[in-house]
Image (tube, rainbow, N blue to C red):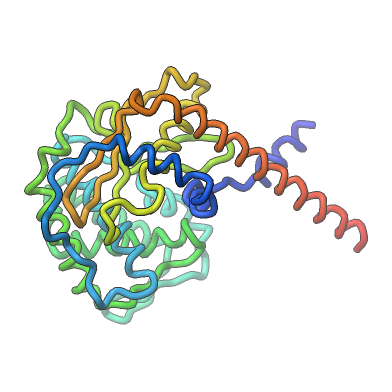
Length: 308
């Protein structure tokens, strides 16, 4: 019986929250609108930083991830806290998973992927410790993190379509305005990349300052689709994962930092208390549907194996 439980647990596939939200836009549209109506914003840049026209395909996603890595490094320096393991650190802890896989360095030399992961992660931690987070080499390292994170997100390294120098300039511009507006990141303590260990949902936040959970966006729009709903779901999942009631949320505020506008929008959850149970029901129903799909898939697999 124990082995069967272990095997079932190993077969369980987590449901990425971002993918769930993407297919639930119609259902959540009214929730998102209600959240936006309650949001208060810091001053917005009159001329937002536009994404380079050279961006194509995966460049937008890589730039978004890269800036996430930069901003967390900035907060690590500001608050004098050591950043916990990043996704790249976790990938580097499983070198046997990448046996036979290589990457090509700028000089044309091929090196094992496992060694590249370790090297990229080490250079990040060294630069943060030295407070050298505005250097070209560190911005390039953030881009490398964004590319390598594709292994975790999609099973393969995300490749740049534009010259890396273009993305370095873009990141530098967003970093400069974040530094100029550093007051909006003020607080007593910071939690970098908080993870919510739920049995069904794959979800982790970008950062939290005190009891405010914030997600970073680098889109051309001030607020992309379902941005506030995403952070509310994180807050609900966090409480759910530790068995807490909706009245005992760890995060009282949710925020969206719009990097190209250097502005943060904040919603106080007490102002939308009526929506919180609705988000919980949405997540519960999504979990139930996800588990049923997995069970149906396993049943089909067993049936086909029996026929063989």
